[in-house]
Image (tube, rainbow, N blue to C red; front, side, top):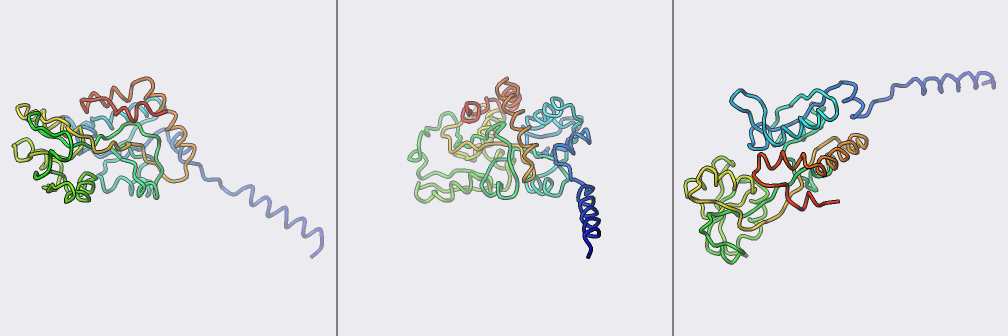
Length: 265
């Protein structure tokens, strides 16, 4: 092939490369659309629920609303369940997940997380009159949990060692009902649900007795979207500092965001 033909072929290839379409990153796509699609479970009060007029409300709902407002975007909720939060993100149905999504090593293998915008305090709760300050006080008693939760997994591992048994219910609503009706000696759940039990039966005065752990609640996003993650992290840091995220959390959960999250650099 002659030098002239080589030059023509090279120019043609370079032209094709230059004109190849460049895929926009997730942040650019959101901004171009003018709308952010947020996957939120609306069946887990007080984080996500529907009011009497079927309007979404809750701490995660208001967090999403604040984000959309600050970014100058329309907000579209993608109703989800716990099991479909991550699939909705991976299939492109949602841009982000704001739905009590705790950060775990297993989830971090398939999606990325923002920095924590709130926290989930996992506790042992019991009536105020029940003396519980350590595991020895629980020996010989049953702890009520929701089946398949992180609390269930944590307690199952050490139940025999601590001399306790586990009473399981299939969902949070049934577990709360058992506690409210006096069928539970103690519960292992979130501090938020302990507060709800207390509200439904003030006579028992359920309260947190021991903290098991504090889970980071973060915004989920697709893997390898550094621009979107950086913007989310910046927004969360600013709104933790100005107190807006804490005000939302306290409004619905009855307590501030755990200090482990608020005081994090």
